[in-house]
Length: 329
Length: 247
Ligand SMILES: Nc1ncnc2c1ncn2[C@@H]1O[C@H](COP(=O)(O)OP(=O)(O)O)[C@@H](O)[C@H]1O
Ligand SMILES: [Mg+2]
Image (cartoon, rainbow over all chains, first blue to last red):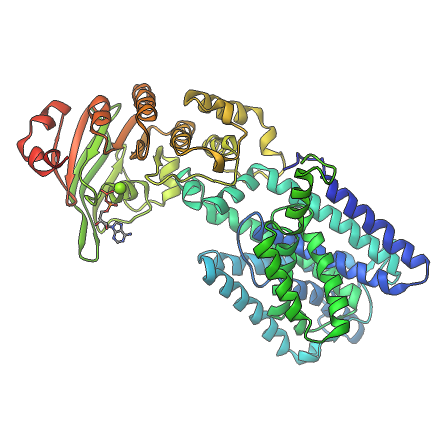
């Protein structure tokens, strides 16, 4: 594990590539790749947030897509009322209101559901996190004013002063900057005393309890931080797609986020980004050949889990160990 | 003679098995109190009830006069009780020193501290290293826990108990699975420890028990059939019949 303030080489390389490549494509007139990269980076933030609890906390949340939806609705609903009237208290296009709202509502949802989910373990935890996410799904399906299952068009993107989300490159760099901040935050947290307790509880909960740690509370705090971060990613996603529907919170999307974390290498800094990059690429390539692209995708994930422990990051580490790649080895 | 731990009328039943059968026991401050008994006698179950992972059906446990019978496990640790596990229980993916540092860190109150890197706090690292040195594992500090030998894992358990600063240490078969040289080293370590801590020692190795214990209680089928000094226990006919004779 690298020390605080020293991002590992893979992180630097990946962030540099993300800064350069999409910009190059953008100025060479290919809007498609910037779109892909924006989606990658937003899903990357969501995966980084999930990695905090899944990778470092050992908490297999199968409901993280709910936060993406909550975050996006926190942009869409105020924008909807700003345009059509009603609910004056929240009717606004201001990002200074919408984004903090997305973070706060997500944190609150994580607090309430986490307090219940974290009483359970193993498969029960997986199932109950999924159940809560489905509850949010059905909640939005039932609200006609926000389009029910047809979804809600976000007519106006968040207004954030100097930053113009209608400009794709500005939106992209705002997302990329957010990703770097999210990674730095998670890096700071997992290396702190709090992070040690979180990882200790993943490795051996009984031991941590016998040392005097109320591991439930530590996990709950991590769960809330993770949810808040993912809600932020959701607000960005809403601004990117300018459309939000309950389908975005479907359990299959929660599964995809889990895949990204596991595929990239859980509990590593760069893993979630590699995982979301791989996901975007696989989705693009495979979906050109077949609409049943989830099947080969699942098989690839299985292969990684079975044959390449630690996901892509694990492969990088092993290559370094054999001195095939530069790095601390 | 002040009792640090007072167990009265403790009972625990698992289905048809009465694992703890009306146990009354005092552990006096500063003593090393051994609990011996055949396999399945209920020794680990007793430790589990004291450390809070198993809830007794009946009876009470008092620590320094305070009723802790139903106190959460993590709170008992804060009140000064720590345990080692019969089956090694460490955070395997972490380094040796990180495991011990977590015990030091636990003593400093809550750890909802999210900013400073834990490994840069020299106060905690140095104390953890000192505890590792006490058990002879200083050179292994940075190794991943998982690569250490079984004997080294047992020593780590002791280093962690030391680092936790608990006044009462519940040790569940610290010699389990150790070879003769490792056992001798463990006995030597525990005999140094017992001058500063109160120890409740569950152990099968009779040589170790008679070398370390100030008092011994014999547990058979969940019941304490005798408590006394090592000499008294050795001379007790019922004990010889029920337990020592079978060895
Ligand atoms: N969690 C449990 N569930 C059911 N039975 C148990 C449980 N723990 C212990 N027992 C039973 O209680 C008895 C005492 O076990 P234990 O305390 O482990 O004995 P010892 O440590 O003295 O060998 C045994 O008969 C054991 O099978
Ligand atoms: Mg036992």
